[in-house]
Amino acid sequence: MIEKETPTAYPIHPLLSGRWSPRAFDEKPVKEEEIRTILEAGRWAPSSNNLQPWRIIYGVKGSETYDRIMGCLVEFNQSWVKNAPVLMLGCYKKTNPKGQENFHALHDLGLFMANASLQAHDMGIGTHQMAGINFEKAKKEFGFPEEYHVATAVAMGYYGGDPEGQLSKELHAQELKKRERNPQSEFVFNGDFKK
Amino acid sequence: MIEKETPTAYPIHPLLSGRWSPRAFDEKPVKEEEIRTILEAGRWAPSSNNLQPWRIIYGVKGSETYDRIMGCLVEFNQSWVKNAPVLMLGCYKKTNPKGQENFHALHDLGLFMANASLQAHDMGIGTHQMAGINFEKAKKEFGFPEEYHVATAVAMGYYGGDPEGQLSKELHAQELKKRERNPQSEFVFNGDFKK
Image 1 (tube, rainbow over the protein chains, first blue to last red):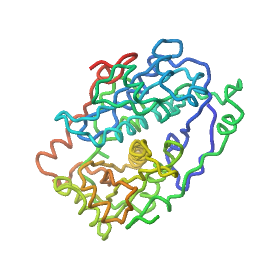
Image 2: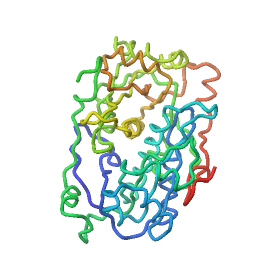
Image 3: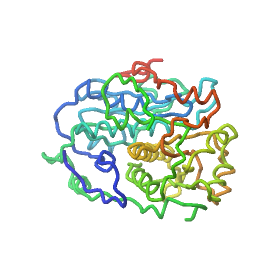
């Protein structure tokens, strides 16, 4: 596993500080049982009214499903994702059992994906979540009815550290870049919001 | 900490299987530094283009901010939340720096909240996320400009196990209920979506 420095302002659990989003992966395959274990972690995420709105499509490199997921990504993501042993689509049901809009479905897909990513990280497997997909194409491609939305894609594989120069020069530099986040003072308020 | 059984189909990390959403809390206060540590875990979540759209309002029991957050919850949540040592609102910026809609902001708030909840759990602190809030009132109350949305609330405190009969009979039964989730066969597809 390629470790990255995470300059935390308060000491947090190593599972949470150690996870990062690689673009280069080891070519070692991820086994079916490992994929299922990662999804199992997502399964136990909380969700609004325990509706569990998440739906997951996954494909393993070399399979038709993998190529079909790849075909739903935007060009930039296709350029680096081709080395990932596993691809996924993160989808959700937009409505609750009464047919009303579930305003929190997208949020709850995020809760699912966080759990899945952390389980993967614990197994030495990196995940890179992507927003850059063709939503409408993906929905059609995998036969989702109207009340569903395909929101995200995920590339997954053992952390690799770009040992064979998988990435372009620019993405290779990003792969090695130090992790950065805004300070809490910019997003935490003990009282009114301040810009 | 009150432990709950989580009947996982595959063995997952205990931090992920152990977390659950209590409604009863110990009266032991949560210190400022503990709150900051929990938020720090959220801070290192991934987000689309690293935009970090999350914004957090928090208040500690006994403070004016706490009461103002309480006033934004729906009646049912107010009924049990009153024993929580800390309340939070989960908010996000709807636009990217170009002023275009950030379609993944709500998803990324979910990624933040998962990390925060897991860090809290590791510290013996339970979190209960809520969708039942008055969004518009909360946005006004805390002075958010138009391009922000208040999406969720969170009650937080040391796991308590309802030792003093904090909860109604019905909610007490829910507090002790076994955890349940749909099987993977209902939401994971290695190929086309199936209902």
